[in-house]
Length: 444
Image (cartoon, rainbow, N blue to C red; front, top):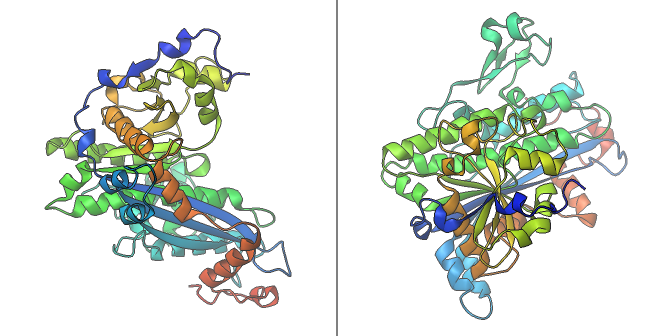
């Protein structure tokens, strides 16, 4: 197997670095808070009578943890549940999208998906205490932390398929309220920038575009909290320096939403540059933590070769070897805005994490990205995760576990609950005979 533990142990040990050899070792003690974002999605029948008519349901949750209180909760022989509750708060939002068999009267299924996706972005606040919506953060992503863009580019019209030289400037610049295609005149939504409509199918499952939306919503939510702190002019930078932002899963995007990875990379680099200019380097602290998958399985296979308290740099050559790709394959250049590492905590548990590089460096496809010195937050991130893991439960990263719990969707008999929630969020009556008449009561 390509993932098997290598016979030459030096392949692993030569890529390992002790935490003490990395920079910024004095900063982890100042990190007091963690904001973790996780999401869940499911596609269910809109009604029991017609199981081919689908509704997609998404939940994204953000978990805020006071790390000092978390430490106190696990300081004794047993976890103090009351102290654990005091250390943790969470916020969540839900959304629903029409799948196959659901269409607004006079519209196709894919155009119905587009309109409802745009509405979801426009009305969904990632936190009820903030006025920012997911649409606002999508525009912020195309700008910078101190100046959100007024439009986002779309390089292909969803209606007439005009692209490249057919469009003025090579793209349609889409504002929050949408615009018209300069070629065919059809309406273009801000949500079209995600391009999930390209994966929509009028018959069958739309789980893939639903998952793409969920992943983007997770990332926008995390950036939203960063933006809130950034906008707090008096104490925002101090708060940023004391907060770690954790994403469940790697810092990457795949499929039709993969081009957004460059925007996330640039946006985080702008944040880091701003912090540096105000003598708050190396921030912000951003990390993706993986719970499952190929790299997690491989990390467990080779963990005995990584000394506790060491981080393993996953070089391009090593990644290509364990994934069965050609040695010169340009892994990750189109999908990732952070680089994967394996960190073996001081209690021996392996963690697969993704950390962004410093500004001006691409994590993959860039020679500088192959240098561990260009990841200045790596030691801080590892030490904070080590602290969280070893001070409370073994084999768990508590912020991720709590966010996952808040974002989890019910299974089994819970499908009826999701069906009812999807009907409510889309404004649908409970029976398919009425649904098919359309339009949705909340449709624009």
